[in-house]
Amino acid sequence: MAPVTTVRTVTGPLDTSALRGPVLPHEHLRLDLDRPGVHNHTLHARHADAIAHELALLHGEFGLSLVVEQTCRGMGRDVAALAGISTACGVAVVTATGWYHEAFHPVEVRDGDTSSLVEVLRREIEEGIGPTRIRPGLIGEVGTGGDRPSPAERRTLTAAARAAVTTGLSVATHAHLGRGGLAQLRLLTGQGLAPHRIALGHQDLLDEPATHRRLAAEGAYVSFDTIGKNHYQDDDVRLRLVLALLEAGHADRVLLSCDVSRHTYLSAHGGTGYGHLFRTFLPRLRAAGVPHDLIDRMTRRNPLRFLTGGPDT
Image (tube, rainbow, N blue to C red; front, side, top):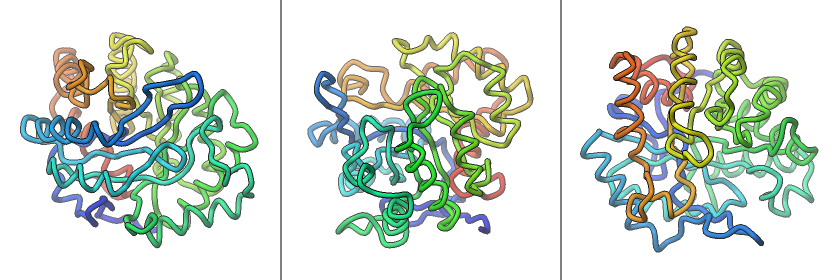
């Protein structure tokens, strides 16, 4: 499918030429992952003002131009709320479709075969989500929970790949703790999806530079997207992993984000927030000698190329 020069946002299509500031390619603005024994993994309506305020500050201070919101089916997605936040903060927002890893699959996955799941995605992509008719601009974060996808996860990944091929959207994954990215890439490309339309998630949680080089060499994007979550991985390790991939010549395959996924991560609640990338991590990359052009590539041009499949912008 031919590359496009627009991204689908929750307030309508937007030409990439209008997006001159950085992009956060893997975040959450509305989310509900609470389940028995796991609580406070939420971003609810009561947090919307704090989120909009934080994003507005980043827009003013750093020029933040776009947030890719990867809450999909079964994760508490609310696209009308995303449109409200986007309007309030002045930052464009892309919403997504697909299914997270098996622990969060809704009944439709258990009861549906691959063809019916493809149809669910196609309908949302082409007709819009529910009564809002807001169309997703990404399939993701399509998840697996281990080194190999479960049978149910194989169905959701296969459906994601087939829907991506026919509709022209890209696919972003959740690789639990960074594991299983190669298996995800094999499955997705095996359905005919080009590797440059795939971003393998949470690779900063996997301290395996050789795996990152292999993913990038095969043409996929390598997402270092939990920056600031030091209880999972120290940013010192993330810095080393990013620098290693740059040194290997793969700057054009790096994506950087923070994956804010619960209200305790918000700045208003004492967390590192959506701005940790800009306020803390990018200055460390600059101090390590990474030039402005590569910073712009990783934080703006790469995510836009990933979303659109288009040329460098």
